[in-house]
Amino acid sequence: MNFLETLKYRNEPLFYFGLICFTLSIMFLVLTRFTIIEVYNVNAWYKPFKFAASTMLYAWAIAWFIGYLPNFDAKLFNWVIIITLGFEIIYIAWQASRGRLSHYNVSTSFYSFMYSMMALAATIATLATAYIGILFLKNDFPDLPLHYVWSIRLGIFIFVIFAFEGFVMGSQMSHTIGGVDGGVGIPILNWSKKFGDPRIAHFIGMHALQVLPVLSYYFLRNTDLTIITGILYFVLAVCTLVQALNEKSLFS
Image (tube, rainbow, N blue to C red; front, top):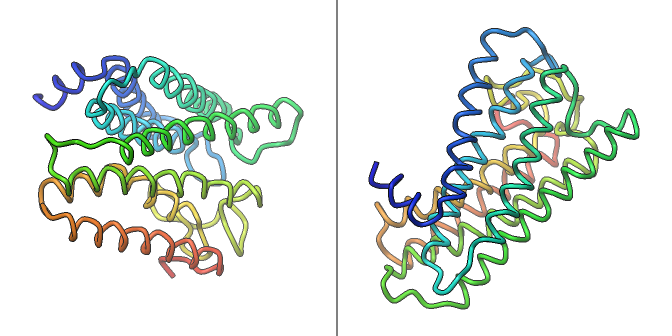
C-alpha cells in the first residue's frame, strides 16, 4: 500500500492508467472462463489480458522511475503513453470480442490501417521510453544507490531493444517461425511448443524494466553484480531470439 500511495503521489495519471489496465486484465481473464470465442485455437480474451497486464506493469514501473528525474515535467510523456498504449488495448479487446485478429490482420483496408496505427503507437511509446533512458544516462542521482540507478538504465535500454524486436514478427506477419500460427502452445502465454516463437524474447527483454531494478535493489546491492546480471539477462533474451529464428521451440 505504501508503494501504491507513493506511486500515486509521484505520477497520478500513470498510476490511474495502470490501475485501469489492471482492472481490465482481470476482466479479460474472467471472460476467458465464460466465452468460447477463439482466435488461432486459443480463447480470444487471453491476448487482451496479456497486453493489459503487461501495460500495467510498464506504466507503474516507468512512473516510479521518472519520479527520480530532476526537473522533469511528465505531462507530455504521460499522455503519449496513455494514448498510444490505451489505443492498443482498446483495439485488441475490440477485435477479440469479434473473434478477429488484431495483429497481422491486413484482410481489409481498415484492418491494414489499424494494424499500421498499432505499429506506429508502439513505436512512439518505445521512443518515448528511450528518451527517459537517455535522461537517466545524462543525470546523476546522488540520493540513489549507484547499483539501482544502473539497473534502471539497463532495464530501460533492454526494454527498448526488445520492444523493437516486435518488428521481427511484423516483418513476417506471424509470431511463429517454422510453422503456422495457431499450433500447440503453453497455457495462457501460448508460446509455441513445436516451432520458433520470438514472443519469448520479446517478453523477456521488455520485462527487464521490472526484473533488473527489483533484483538489484533487493538482492544484488552491488554495481558490478548489477551490470553483469544485466548483460547476462540481455544475452538470455538474445539467445531465445536466435533459437526462435532457427525455428526451434524453447519447449521442444
